[in-house]
Length: 118
Image 1: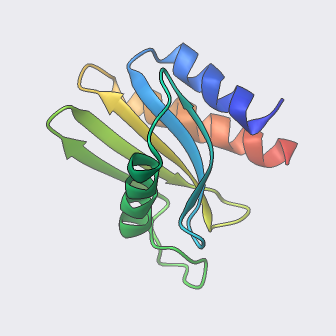
Image 2 (image 1 turned 60 degrees about the horizontal axis):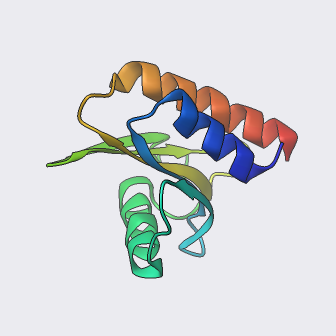
Image 3 (image 1 turned 120 degrees about the vertical axis):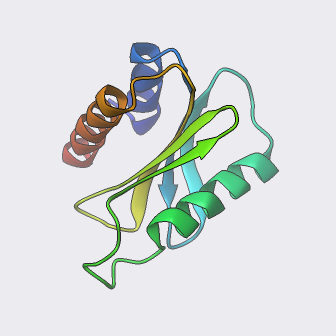
């Protein structure tokens, strides 16, 4: 299953997940994205920059966070660092009605499957 398929499945499981993206934090690039509509590159760049700000961009330190959650007026931004290559991360935007614990646990499990498939 492709990364794009995995992102789309996560969004299908959680309809209030508006954007699911896979990013390379070291380059500041979104590598794959799933969203209801085409997103402008500026939004994707800003989303990745937010992930870099929340998680850090390199795997040089064991003290870098594995998960970061930021509240916005519209919902939440959730960033999950990959365990096998710490410069990769899931970047997720979801609405206010989401159960953050359930969603984050499911997203972490999905990221683990993505890492195993790589």
